[in-house]
Image 1: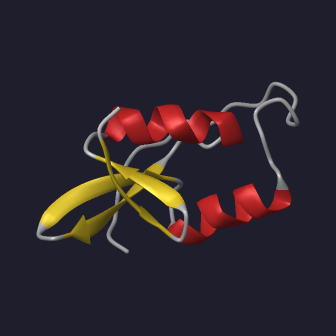
Image 2: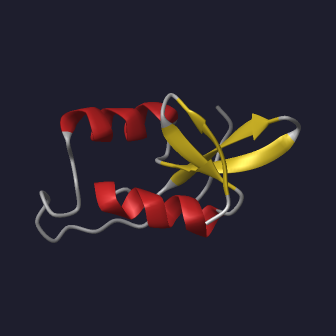
Length: 77
């Protein structure tokens, strides 16, 4: 994975798929973007708050039974 940087301890990646792969451990299926040094990077979660809340609450794919959702679409932070 091409980890670019971290923001609030959350990794930001060079591709959407890398962000989604990382987010899957927290049952997150969406992503959002950040701008770091003039480069768009991708982070799991529809918003920065979503991913930080999921981590803080300990929400993982193993703690949630079966549900799935579709996602996509970024949006700046």
